Length: 86
Image (cartoon, rainbow, N blue to C red; front, side, top):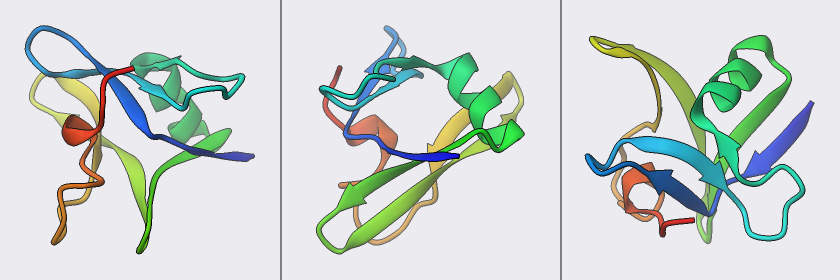
């Protein structure tokens, strides 16, 4: 299993996450459906690295289907919506 850092995200016109990215990584960009499959199958894990540590990216079952998110904490530096676009 590879542990993949995510530094950017792709977003649609509504701001929903469509892809995870890390410039220069062979796997990047990784589409949302593929990322969800990776996490659920245990093939790969994804995280947002930041100076004070890391935040895991997980799959959530929402009213409109599965989506990717980080858990809220005291910083917005690691929220997927707040990462730069890829």
